[in-house]
Length: 97
Image (cartoon, rainbow, N blue to C red; front, side):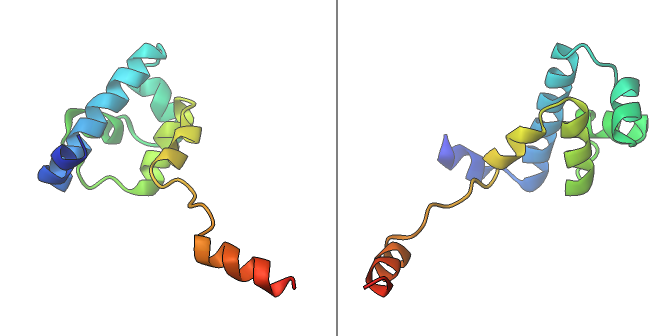
């Protein structure tokens, strides 16, 4: 699966995310207009993203849409916090001595 995502263009990934967002929105029972009102984005922006036409969507707009469908906590999965590196842990341990 990891290799498959690297074979896709950025536009293809964004199109898939738009489709997935549409599925989530519908599952939550929200219309594009309701997401528009909750997010402050236009229905056109949301519609374009869901159709895969909005490949230039900003991260700020994406965050607003996730907040509107109450999935903002999932943003952490994009770049999870890294654990402390073994080297840093080693250095911390030896500084305390």
